[in-house]
Image 1 (cartoon, rainbow, N blue to C red):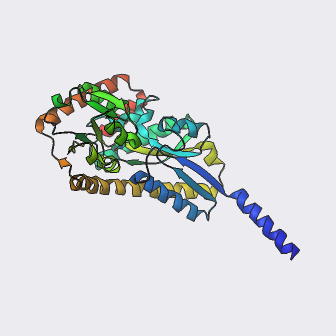
Image 2 (image 1 turned 45 degrees about the vertical axis):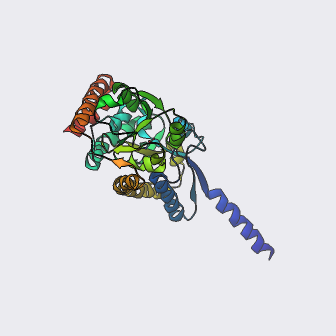
Image 3 (image 1 turned 180 degrees about the horizontal axis):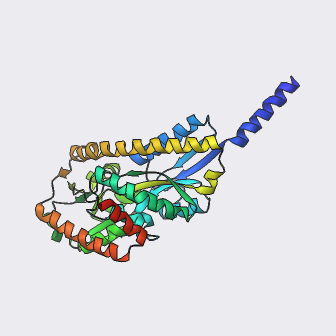
Length: 319
Ligand code: PCA
């Protein structure tokens, strides 16, 4: 009896010493498909490791604000996290190529761009002790406004919600006034009049109940930006080999599943916007031409400041 109890106690200690729980921050809310995808990733991983590696997801910026997530992983405040990849374009423009207008506008193009971008950003992140696990695109970005936008001139003077430096530049070149707002604060930013227009995916439009504050949506499909899930390299290296393999396998499955979820959302969430009373209209030839001119100007600016590594992505992608 005594021995059995001691054995049981020893087992408990052994199990809890081997088991790990990782806190994983993301800026996006629970209803976002990216968050649902990482929840599945966490579930797969717990199952594959028999509970040796559990992940607790902290959504909507509840644990770490978006702007701090990369640094928090770097300093090992958290071992893993998700963020919007182009938010690192301050480090190197290589991180932001997927948010340049009209460079990659379909899933096929986005995939080709990611193939060119992945090795470059993997090397850049390695310099910071970080390792990318997987990256998943948002549906192509569309335009939300009150009333129909016929030409770029109609954007003039609008308070425009932005989520990164590229969108800020885009809005400014369109004559609008950019204001940085995190995705989870969109409803509040509109209801308080801080912003009155935005460019984002149909997913984020639905997740933020855009029909409460705008009347029109146009799928201008100008770019297909991505989220990325990154782990601290030292934390990963210290895992047992079989747990490392499980992380990589779950990550690969999450990337495949995430791209599929994204494509499914593009259609379903556009239909959802319409079903909730938003007028969905194709952009006029004139509007597209005006937006493309802004895109061309932005790409010229981008190329003028891009590192060799960043430029190599574009060359690779275009050839
Ligand atoms: N949703 C996120 C990023 C891109 C997207 O579609 C956002 O609006 O912040």
